[in-house]
Length: 131
Image 1 (cartoon, one colour):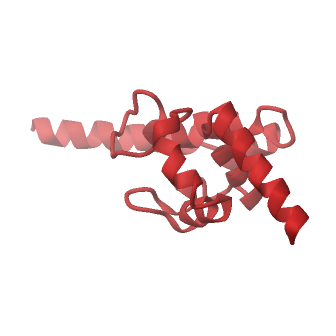
Image 2 (cartoon, helix red, strand yellow; image 1 turned 180 degrees about the horizontal axis):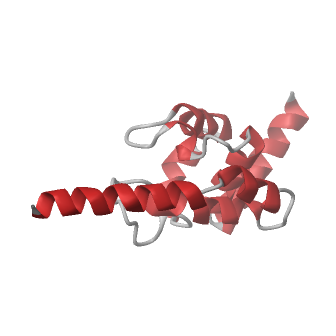
């Protein structure tokens, strides 16, 4: 009996969430805002990437240099590839199937500390200059 009630509650809560979850509208509302990347992280990524994640699967923690340094060394294109295709327990597109590639890049950059972001942007500028 208890399990039947639990299943019914779970089904009802999923229905309510599905009715209220409108990622396309959310993404359209924040498109072009200065905090677009940060808002995407909060909405789609924080479950696993927050300082105290709801789902702790070993994902790199947002703004944590020691977690991001080895990943950033692989380059932004590799980070984007892992985000687009999924990596380890992370689903493809980080679970944001409605996000554009540009929005995924903004979310990645939003999870990096200011120092790592600055170093990465300098590398990108140098790369563009030399190619």
